[in-house]
Image (cartoon, rainbow, N blue to C red; front, side):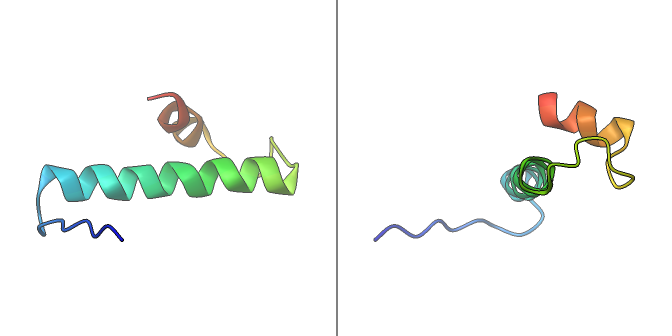
Length: 50
């Protein structure tokens, strides 16, 4: 078992939050099959490729 400890208000915390947001966005696009839905804007698409 592995535990990842991340200190609050650090770059690593921000990276983990961004990673989670990208994963959620990718899942919503792939699972819903609604690639051009109203919830997906230009900024969301840019973040997928950043």
